[in-house]
Image 1 (cartoon, rainbow, N blue to C red):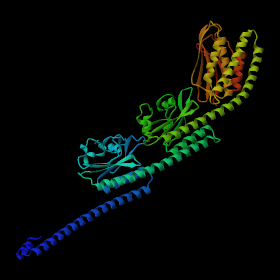
Image 2 (image 1 turned 90 degrees about the vertical axis):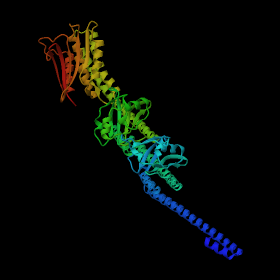
Image 3 (image 1 turned 60 degrees about the vertical axis):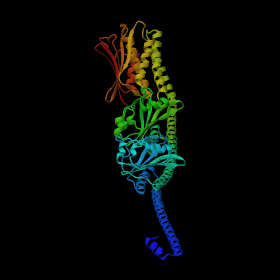
Image 4 (image 1 turned 45 degrees about the vertical axis):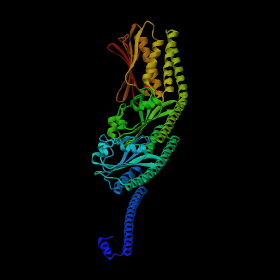
Length: 586
């Protein structure tokens, strides 16, 4: 009651009136308090309504962003921007777990790069720093000032965290699992209200659902692409194409459907024990020029040894990867090296490179393993088909070569003269063995070509065993680059080489008891040059190959001029006697 009114009532000396006025004053005071409480309640409701409106607006904006974008990498920057706007903060970051769910990777930020000074994505282990703690505990953290003094804090220079006093960190929870964390920060101290915490938590829930849906969509899309790749490769393998075309289509379809920058297929060369490039899909020619890799070295060596897919997040930082500079230059980062296995044998590898760092999922590895097995079976089937065709051709060639041997035996019988039966038989045996060496090699090689070096080694071995007398010490070897010929040419070269070696033993070492016989292969621009030189007895001073034509020289002349379309020479060169043939390349 006001003092003036109290004084007036006292002067009137009217107790009842005083009582009534006092009661009225109490009622007025009560009504004023109720009115004030109502106004406070209205203000609270208005604040809550504003908060709900802000939350609704934020969720609506997030919904609109999600509705227009399916790719997570495009959604997250939008979410980070909205988070700062609705919470009135200056900075926001969004972290997501990797596939192994043990590492948080910074995927979006409003004010910094997503990589450190070495180009690596910024990562935190489970429980590391405030962000890692929130992910592990699945509950939010709100620090109003000097966040760096919290014992859970971890300083990351790339995020310039020294600028920020406060932090609000909220987990992204989907169906009970934490899939990431969203952080907001302010440069000045800031006491985060329940409204802000609730608002960011609502955003986190919406984002978690969107990310989960995006991942399911991407997973389904990838699975469809993977199945498409397998189906395309299966169709290619069963088509009526040559092996080279099949392999090229396989690497092309794999690169296209699985978004690899480079896909290269290597097969093992058993003789050289190297991985040889057979097919490649790439926009650069530099990768195709790299040298063959010895079997057992590098990442491919590990894949061949274990028989399992070997992956690398960044080949440029692998100590046993030999082509780091090339990878740096061509922008190759992650690698999946797939062994090509058929039954228990590994015949090569399929290298699949990505441009950006990529963790290969179990589904991707499973698809690549299936592709590798399919390609290996296709290669094996192609080789079996070639060998089957070669066997049919060999039956025909064996028949022709047997006729050739029969003709040689008739000539041998005609020219036998004073030779002993043992000498005649040994010469004939060596001619048969020369032809047999060609067929033996043909049955073991993958292609319809024969190595002249291997023929020479077989002939020298047979000659050493059957024609060289025990008291003769003759060293024999083959020198020069290898030469591969068709089986028909190889038969003729084998017989010619056999005769030249036999003549070297019989005539060059008739008197001499030691020396050497050297078989040399020399490549000329348009011809091959094959010679047999020995350090034994020299030719007679008046020797004339046109007049002194024994059976061996007749065989050499006939095969060189007829089958090989070349020339034969026999001459002395210093201490050597040299028998040689020159024939054109084909």
